[in-house]
Length: 134
Image (cartoon, rainbow, N blue to C red; front, side):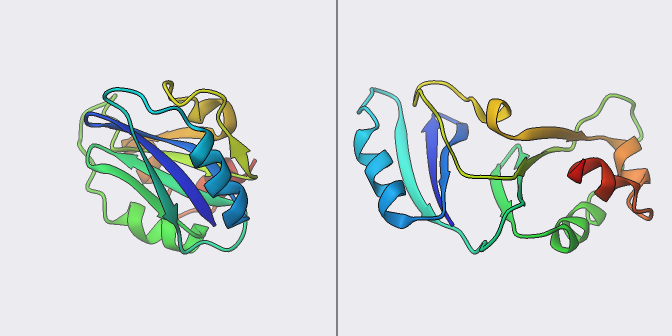
C-alpha cells in the first residue's frame, strides 16, 4: 500500500491511501506546495484492507491486521484516570484521497476509535475486534 502523509509542525495526518503506486505519486504531484506543510510518500508493509493506523503523541503507526494491533495495544499500561486517551485507532477500509492538503480529514474517510482504559480492559475478549470491524 502507498500513503501520502502530511506534516505541519508536530501535527501529521494521512492525505491518501492507494493500492497503486502510480496513483499515489500522481496525487503527490498534484498537492500544492504550501509554507509550513510537508508531504511524504510512504510505501507501507500492508497488502489488504482493512488495516489500522495508530495515532499517538509521537506520530502515526501503520498496523496490517487485528492480531498485530492487539499485540501493540496490550503493551499500553492503563492510566488509572477516566478520560485519558492513550492512542486513537483509525480503521482504513478502502482507498481514499483527501480533497485538501491543508486540513486533517482522516476522520471523514476512516472510523476513529479512542483507546482509553475501558477499551484496554476489553482486550481479553473479542468485543474490541467486533467493535473495530463493525
